Length: 86
Image (cartoon, rainbow, N blue to C red; front, side):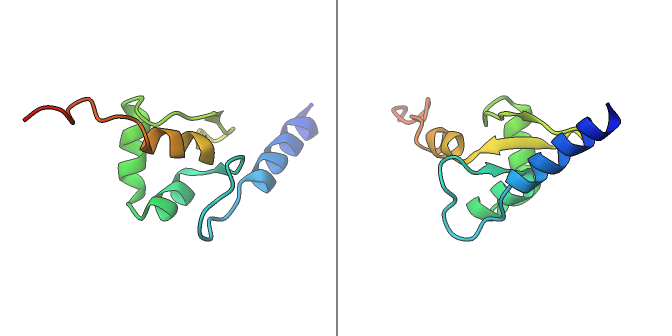
């Protein structure tokens, strides 16, 4: 049982990609990778996740968020709820 959990964790880490340019839509990213991609600090990304603004696929065994690049792109394209206020 312990080996299976460890294998899943290693498999997840193997699928998490380093961000070099634009990640593919199906890329699984960690918090630091999303921060590097968006050129913001990781605290900003963590706050967006905590406010349920940035969707996550789930969380790894150590509590780290797993984020799909396509979801980040969709989140960035969302309409601004205050955009029409003048």
